[in-house]
Image 1 (tube, rainbow, N blue to C red):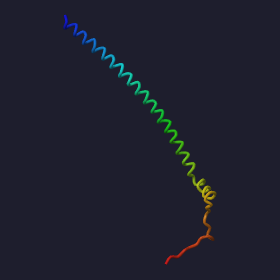
Image 2 (cartoon, rainbow, N blue to C red):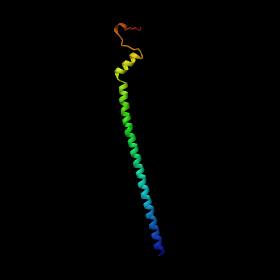
Image 3 (cartoon, rainbow, N blue to C red):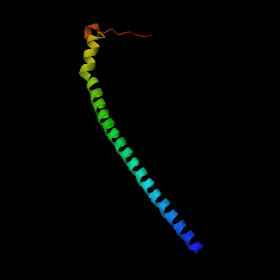
Image 4 (cartoon, one colour):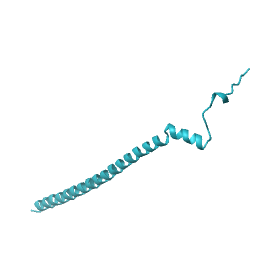
Length: 90
């Protein structure tokens, strides 16, 4: 009789621990899934920002803009034939 009672107690405790383990496992998986979704959204936002930055960089680096800045800020100009000077080295 005592052996059956011990066996029932062991099986009861095993089923309780199994249930707790399943609940903990499900909870951990849900937390991990939520974190994955947050990281995927962050990745999507970063991809969008990266695309915008690439567009902005290409806009800033256009030939016309670089030439305009060279003329206005650096006071550079195209070289004309009359202003060319050739130096000879010996």
